[in-house]
Length: 194
Image: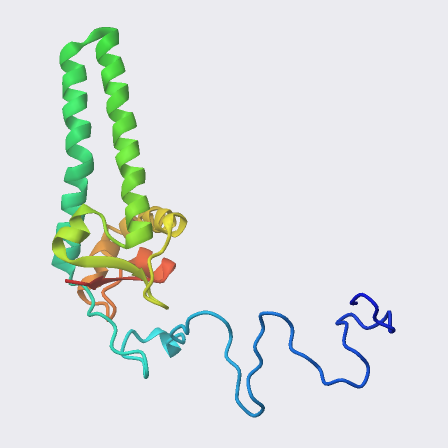
């Protein structure tokens, strides 16, 4: 209702008999032109989960091979594990209460590096190993990074990969999307980016 509006039930303040004016900040499309939602267009979901080219959006990056994935995991474990191991060895060498304190520091460093790894993979799709080998962890549906929470869930889901004699870690060797069981559960793919 606008000031001086003779109709108190008119919430838009339009004068009776005048054409309807669009609201502030909302431009109106010409009649007969279909309107699109706000924001950037997103790729439509792929029917049946087929990881391939989508019309109008170009080809998706190629899937990462098993050896690249294994190499990236090994590099990441070195980046997290070596500082932890060195600090534990120093703490063991010191011994006593001071050594136990240094070893506790090693645990804190390992947890901190592990959380940083999850953060980097969740926000960029890459940590040191994936970046070095030119691969990235992405959501299957739209090719975007997972976020910290889903990356954490994916790492918990790797339990499924090891449950039956670690066959889930080998599954990418013959799977059409090169996915582990954790990738399937979380709808993720690992792609080559470099």
